[in-house]
Amino acid sequence: MSTVFASREQLKRQILAEGRQYSRGVPVSIRQVSIALGGRTVLKDFDVEIPSCEFVAVVGRSGCGKSTLLRSIIGLETLQEGAISIGRNAQSRPDVRIMFQDSRLLPWKRVLQNVALGLDSSFTPQAERVLAQVGLADRAHDWPATLSGGQRQRVALARALVHDPSLLLLDEPLGALDALTRIEMQELIEKIWWNRGFTAVLVTHDVAEAITLADRVILIEGGGVALDLFVDLPRPRARGSARFAAMEDRILQRVLQHRASAIDEAKARVNGNEEVR
Amino acid sequence: MSAGAMVDVPRGRTLASGNGIANIAERALPWLVPIALLIVWQWASSTGRLPSRFLPSPRAILKSFVELRSSGELWTHVRVSTERALSGFAVGGGLGLILGLLTGSFRWVETLLDTTLQMIRNIPALALIPLVILWFGIDESAKLFLVALGVFFPIYINTFHGIQSVDRGLLEMGRSYGLSRWALYREVILPGALPSILVGVRFSLGFMWVMLIVAETISARSGIGYMTMNAREFMQTDVMVVGILLYALLGKLADLLSKGLERYWLRWHPAHQSAR
Ligand SMILES: Nc1ncnc2c1ncn2[C@@H]1O[C@H](COP(=O)(O)OP(=O)(O)OP(=O)(O)O)[C@@H](O)[C@H]1O
Ligand SMILES: [Mg+2]
Image (cartoon, rainbow over all chains, first blue to last red):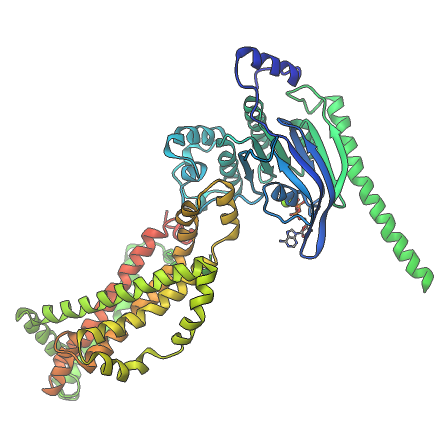
């Protein structure tokens, strides 16, 4: 990215001065949500308010319910309790797009047609442009079956980015990519989000990625919010900086702490059993 | 994809393709046994060991084929039989496809019809022949009915199954990308069910010829079956063998055609990718 963003507020003022529409983002409000899957509680009293245009990263161990959270936001899961609302009022039907954890390309459509899914043909140039941005312009007319896993993931990313949603949900969009491509794609996501100003929720395993991209990092543990951290580093963020490292360390410590306590609990259980014997 | 196993996987050449002689030998090898059989057969016929009222010699068969062709008789019979097969296939296959699409797509149609259709499926189609003759006489409609019946079930069942087993993840994806009901059907459900439907088509082509042969053998005034049965009255074994070979040829053609359709419509399928 060429511009150095001092703060989001500064950019907002600048864009407003240029007369552009600052944002199309919508707020998301998740209130006291509980979800059970296959008889097991996955989310319990989950409570998060996301203001419009915010970039939220969701981290947590595998199986903690990150995908379930995203799926519930677009209404693919039944809530046992609580409510989720998107947008400022109930009447508005905001445009929401999700990139699923598995790429879910239609195998019978060529790469470009997959990217342009649900758009009419006037959007084809735009689809081509985004496909080029994810580095796959030369594969536009191939079948998805001929792509590698990481390439499929990038096609799915392009498909999510070509739309102009007010809320974009990304479920581990870069999980299958090498370190270098990953950094390029992070820059792309940040740039597009910055220019369009939608609300974004990104699920990731990579704490550094979360801190690089997000305004706010949420750690899920035991079905609830274990940590809710604002990242007040100026963009673009340098991974090497001391504050970056401190923040990364803090989140990792919190994750490990949970593991430590889980081990302690297990030990206590074992000891307890021994005492009974 | 549930029907994945039924899709032809192009096999790579096993022998080194650079070696000319090995290549020719490999191509010739499969024909060795059939040619040897033909030679033995011809030899047995011409030495009188194989009586021609039992099985005519290959040369006699070839001769009668040429005669039938030049008199125009052959063409007429082939055309009539092909027309019967195709119209029966269109009626039975069309109905199977439509009903399969309906029961696969709408819960209530499935509840309404599926049990009935499954019960009817258990009746062997050939067991209906006495009734069919009673209903339709030895009319064209009897043959049409039998062929359509034979074709209906393989297509119906595979269409139904294909629609039911469309990847739910892709459906979710399609809906969340704003596809309307019809667009979802056209872009996701139908292409997803297509491999299975084509498997049904291939099965049904087999049934199509069986039913046609039976129907034409029982009663007909034209067609390959008629030609064969007529030849039996006059002990023309050569014509009978020509008829049998014609059925085999038409069956093979139909199979090639359906494979061609598969190769075109399923060219996106991973099983068809290794050719590139
Ligand atoms: N359809 C389902 N039926 C029953 N249980 C499910 C179902 N889907 C998910 N689960 C369970 O819900 C829990 C949360 O799953 P989820 O997919 O949200 O995890 P995740 O945080 O996205 O994990 P990962 O990082 O590995 O993708 C898991 O324990 C999983 O086993
Ligand atoms: Mg997940």
